[in-house]
Amino acid sequence: MSKSVDKYNKTLDTVESDVKKQIKALNKTLKQTKIFEEKVQMQLEIDKKRFESEKPNVSISVEYSKYNDPDYYRLLYDLRNEGKRMATDFEISGIVIFGNNEKIINHVILNKSSGSLEVPIIENRR
Image 1 (spheres, rainbow, N blue to C red):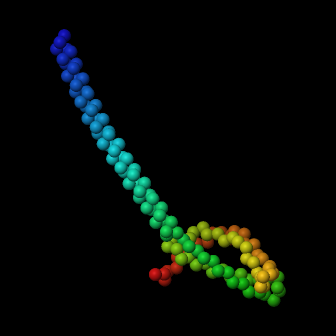
Image 2 (cartoon, rainbow, N blue to C red):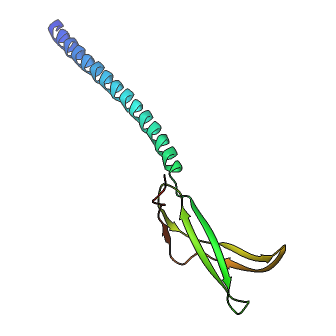
């Protein structure tokens, strides 16, 4: 009977040793996973800052000219993108006010432009 108990004790010692090795390996893996997660989070923050700094910066200038009929105007748009990325799905909306000195003569409400515009970056930028 004592041989049988010794055999079971030896088997249990082996199992216990194996379980300790597995726990040690799992703890190392968990630690490496946490380190990897932290590095990914840091890289994500760096990428977000870079993405924000490279965003499109579109300025719009509007010129107008009158036709013979004072109720009609021609609006000319100039879109300039001084950012580092192309502006896609760009929509224009706003109010253009025509005035003479401090008196408002007329206004035009621009609802969203039909379709989407793409405004490329300015090529000859430094």
